Image (cartoon, rainbow, N blue to C red; front, side, top):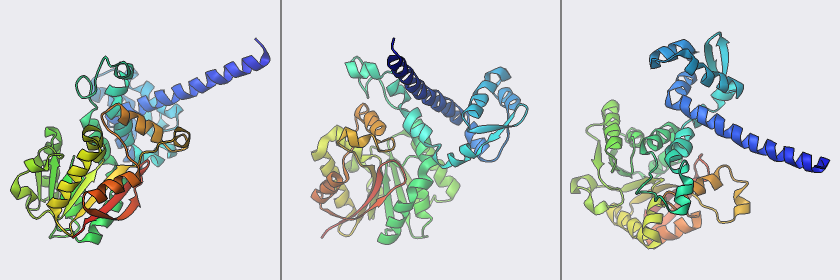
Length: 341
């Protein structure tokens, strides 16, 4: 083997090792997130490896390697023998830990069997589904980063009764209701567990008289109770329409948008939070996580569209786009539209 060949071989090996390092790091971070250790450390708590092991009923030898690896990767540091605290690198990542659930944990069932999806031996929605619980938890943790443009849009429109399709934990709706004493909310989600969490949010926030949770298909507005939809003058939809787009196609998506327009009526508003898709692979390479985000959607019955495509569909449904606002998550944006007379 020549010197050049050896150098190329070493470079190839190092490249794969760097990729593998990222995989191991994200797996360990995800485990620490699921165990609640990242949240505890983020709150300023020192993690005692023995205490964590005792709480799990296991030997400390099963806990310490995980924390020691996070020390190696710089997310925590040793405070004292057997005790760990969050490092500067770990603290810088605190606002983003929800991504561990939304981008990795939620799609773990899909990517561990990716080759079976590619060959057709398994089908998404029949044999494999993403983790709804992981997705909800991650989005809940990220809501503070996502809510700014949505809150501004609602303030600007003067909405009085807001319906959120796919409400999850309903924390966003609770924040909307707290914008003013006269604002009411309706949360719609078909997942039983999400609705249970949403109702806990209603109780915790003291909004029993202003915020109602409906367990129903957010894509089937006709099935919603008449008393729930009565008076709704704004609909919010976060990261849901791209599922409709893949499953019902463009025509079906426009039809749903039309139903929303009729529901809110003339002068009513739609607020959409979505991710803008791209079409050119060479351009994707320079976009933070966008190629990965588009890949996972391709295998989970979802399809991203570009901002111009979303605007065109909204226009066809009888609404006029008032503004686009950036959202601090990947290639996300907030679209605000009004129903024209």
